[in-house]
Image (cartoon, rainbow, N blue to C red; front, top):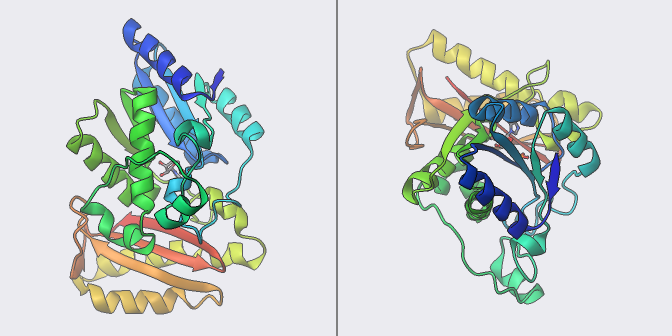
Length: 299
Ligand code: AMP
């Protein structure tokens, strides 16, 4: 397994593969890998076969974090990640530094802060203007600008034939698919299912923050998803507004749980649904103490 930290070296390697007709599968991550990430690696390998190459990027991208968010304390353990990648049969781990990705310094979401702190010459961003307005986009302004920009950069460095994203970040996957279609990236996007802990909590690097009773309280997301599925199964159609207030009460039964949003929408267009019925997509974001968790399901 090769570890590449320079952008130019990564691109050179990818161009050599291209020249030899080698297929490349890519899994972008922020590291602190868990079984969910590993399932994406398996999906990538399955797509490119034994003769292909699987590349994983491990990069905590500063431009997708707001100044108030957890960039500095985002969990990291590169040694363990590399061991997991090696065991999973990864060919290349791309671990760029901030300076490699955003030359002469990195900027966070807040341009004014960034410009004060770092006079960076980096000034080109990729912005999706429709699907990124709601849910995570509304709750975390500029977040998706950081995501689409870094993913576009990574695609240009890794030149993948196939890239695998998790359904766990449903809106993110939809936005990446749209970006790929709109900007003609020659890559196929695969969206792989969410892996869960035994009690239903979606695996996430941020679960590390959940200590003591907060870990138990975090199962409220899964319980609410199960309840919503049950309600939709029993009744043909429910008012989204009423359903949201009922689910908020249910979530906030837990003393440290605070609902950020719960949304019902069309899974293709992400447009908001006023009636909830079978096939409607549900997504929610909940603070458990200071940790913000997201999850989603097709009802
Ligand atoms: P992250 O490291 O959190 O940026 O995630 C990297 C990729 O892994 C993204 O495409 C996520 O959607 C995906 N992912 C995160 N958690 C899970 C999970 N529990 N199951 C499957 N994929 C996941």
